[in-house]
Image (tube, rainbow, N blue to C red; front, side, top):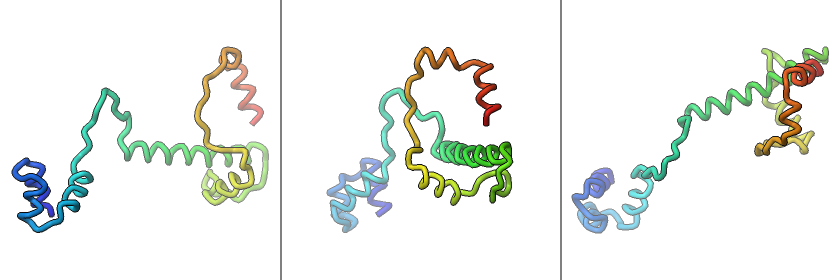
Amino acid sequence: MQLALADINENKLSIRAASRKYGIPYTTLTDHKKTVSPKKKLGRFTNVFSADEERDFVNHLIDMDDRLAYEYAEKNNITHPFKGGSAAEQWYRNFMRRNPDLSLRAPEPTSVARACGFNRVQVKIFFDNL
């Protein structure tokens, strides 16, 4: 299979000729050629993060979410089962199940009034209330 795909990719043989030479069905070779060959990047847009970096970033966001629940419980002197400075994944899943009105959401544009209200004093008041 690898030899046939190498011959096809190097334009030594057509898919049909490679199929006859190596005894591999034509459709199998076409399917493998579609999946094996790298996708050509079109356009000017590229990803900022690699797939591994994006996975690390997502894990970081989830970890910060767990820590926020822990910090809220600590600041308000609420007894909790959290260990190690963050909430457990099972707790998070149960919390989301109990609160279906919470969800992952797409960002919306900020209104002018809201943007003007976002200043150091208001942010400090918000975090003091946590």
